[in-house]
Amino acid sequence: MQREKFGSRLGFILLSAGCAIGVGNVWKFPWMAGQYGGGIFVLIYLLFLAILGLPVMVMEFSLGRASQSRPVRLYQKLERPGQKWHLHGYAALAANFLLMMFYTSVTGWILHYFVSFVSGDMTGITNEQSEQLFGNMLSDPAIMVGFMAIVVVLGFLVLSFGLQKGVERVTKYMMLALLALMVILAINSFTLLGVKEGLSFYLTPDITKINGNVIVAAMNQAFFTLSLGIGSMAIFGSYIGKERSLLGESVNILVLDTFVAITAGLIIFPACFTFDVEPGSGPSLLFVAMAKVFNNMDGGRIWGSLFFLFMFFAAMTTIVAVFENILACVKELTGWGRVKTCVICGVAVLVLSVPCALGFNLWSGFTPFTSSSSILDLEDFLVSNCLLPLGALCYVLFCVSKKGWGFDNFIAEANAGKGLKMPKILRPYLTYVLPVIIAVLFVIGIVTFQFADGFTVWGWFTGLFAK
Image (cartoon, rainbow, N blue to C red; front, side, top):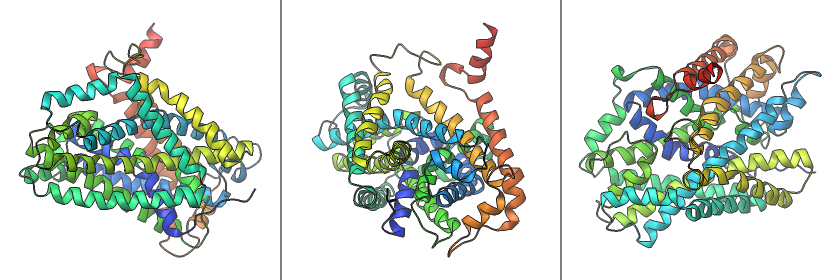
């Protein structure tokens, strides 16, 4: 079977950036910044992108390009006989499915709000009605499952046309449209009366707000936004040649991803302070809060439509990229053709995504943590707090350990081609410091992570043994 390749370097950069850029940037990053102290969270997040996200991204790209294989098989091509590193490949595939099980629902919310603004259903509603509409959406099984299904079908439809004609071409247009829309919306936010207060909250670090939860949240967000630890970047590394070094390509992708995340905050926080919306209102910030904002603005229907359109583009770039990862892994395991694999994987993702969509209505009785928790909370916790950091740790250890691929092999692959080189002087940091940082912050995150109503995962875990 002839292996597919990207048609251009730009296609690789935009698709890889598209995988990184998604609801993690435009939905999760703003509400986490609002909830975890504004500027100090942003500062720590940027620090973790540089010291954790960038090297792990280079490692994933290196593993993919060296093996010319998907995450499930790459370990088997690079590990020594008898080793068990390849077990993580299957865990990575499972993590991709789990990520999409709730990501498709959130993307469905975005699509529903876009349609509502375009149709005029959001025009003239009161602040109280904004809150009711979000709750009504969550409680309606037809809306939740229907829009989630549209997202799944659209994603695999794009994939069915192939890597270059489908995935690469569509992602290019969506990414360019996304960047243009963000600039337009950011310029509009800079004309609002609350721009000074919003930017001060968002960009001025307050060191008194630093605590363990802020630090761990910033690390988890760095991994979540870059889709690191589950092989999403490794698959794109397997589609490129050795003309360019991987540090330079990773920096380009990191810059694009960071631009979108920071710009999302520039759009949202001036609007929040202009229209007296609580910036720490949590996951509903971009739905309840921003609906209030747009209904208090001149031309709010137009701005609201543009806002949720750019959010939908951002989410779909990740959907398409992760679907491609799932598709490529299943194709390699089964030998099926692309169209057949699209149909089978599409049905599988659709079925697996139903619990999250119904978790707010028909299956709302299942509360995995507290009375206010949902299936989405469980799936998000497993991906963000467990599978992403542990997967990243596994990739790092494999790249630097003598019992894995080894540092010399990693650095040779990363530095092949033109562009920025990974300095060999970083070997002590990458070998001894980086794995320890990830492991320690993972443990701290599990012990200290707290849901609503004072629930802690550690307390829940120890309670199981107490019984």
